[in-house]
Amino acid sequence: MTTREKYVIVTAAGSGTRMGASMPKQFLNLGEKPVLRHTLEAFFAAIPQIHAVVVLSAQMKEYWRNLCYTQKFYKPQTFVEGGLTRFHSIKNALKQIPDDAVVAVHDGVRPLISPKLIQRLFDLAEQYEGVVPCLSSSDTLRCLAKFEEGWLYDSQSESLPAREQIFGMQTPQIFDARLLKAAYSLPYEDSFTDDASVVQTYLSKNPEEKSRVCYVPGEKFNLKLTTPDDMLLAEAILSLISK
Ligand code: C5P
Image (cartoon, rainbow, N blue to C red; front, side, top):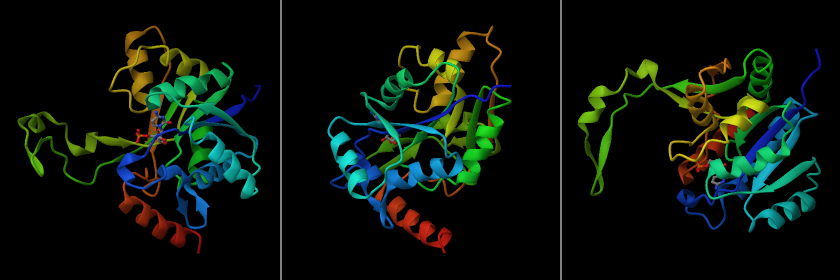
């Protein structure tokens, strides 16, 4: 059996407005290194020969290139310009991926992913056309509608499935490149907020495709840094795990 080349597309073209910082969160320092560097280092630690395709906004491309240079972070990276949404950013990046590769897509703002989980997901990708890490909810979930400072009860919550059946999706989501490219040829929908949503929609429209997507446990520490609180939490976790 020939081993397929492994790629990771790291999305880092978002503006990160919810963080309220002057700089998108992927470039903020976590400990002594930028968030995006932590993210990339986890992939190179897991799979040293992996090809990294980093999606950046036109404004931040030079900034990141210079930062890597001044920090002597010389790991090879292919840079791709981002699009209007995450979907469009990934669509651009997929042009760099050969059809016969296996490709992970990871949010640049999830720096605490463990190399162990990355390896496990790539191992599973030998058996399944798609592998997606996720976590079940320990909180009770409810649908609410925005109201002034807070929210109001929305009767739709009665139709929500039990919490044991609801999962939060994480990244990296890993796919057979041919399948992911076919899925990303669909026209954009607002519900396409991760790769599995694109692939599942593609598979439901193409029932002759026999591809299987396997959902497996992710990691609690694999946080998606969104608000300033997340940054504090990530700092605390980082100091714990690097002790
Ligand atoms: O939009 P959201 O906050 O879910 O972003 C998830 C990831 O997608 C982030 O890493 C962000 O930088 C990236 N993104 C992107 N291009 C966009 C919007 C978001 O690469 N146009």
